[in-house]
Image (cartoon, rainbow, N blue to C red; front, side):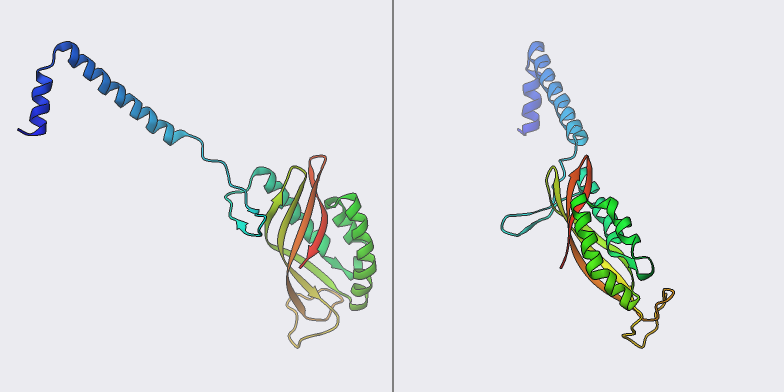
Length: 204
């Protein structure tokens, strides 16, 4: 005798009360299974895993950025072009352009460094630079401080020619070729009154 036949015979031998009980259990199981399926389909996605650098220096790959880390990266990316680009014909405009992105303390340090190093070099070489951000990410972040790594292409046009190749887009007053330097910049940011401001720039 097959299992199916035995089950049919066993069911046929049940009293109406037992038959109703079995049907009730089967119905309850079907409803529970449907509810479980709906929960699995509609439950919220797991929280994003934030990329971090562990204490041993290893990199922990994360998923999508949190909303706050997106603001951190946006602040870093907005600051770099204004802080690293300059034109020898309007050097005073660079610190003014960069200042809104910087903390007051770093703005003063940036001003001193710019006047002491960039102004004499740019004036002597009639240099014009443009900074293009090519990538950025968060290294670590807390409630009020963060570090970003930003990859930057710096285009430099100088009056002193270093190559026989002509520049494709020479700036007025600059006769040298365009040079491209690929740099990485560690950006330190601090939250001030709800806004992320740059507190340090370290190229490496």
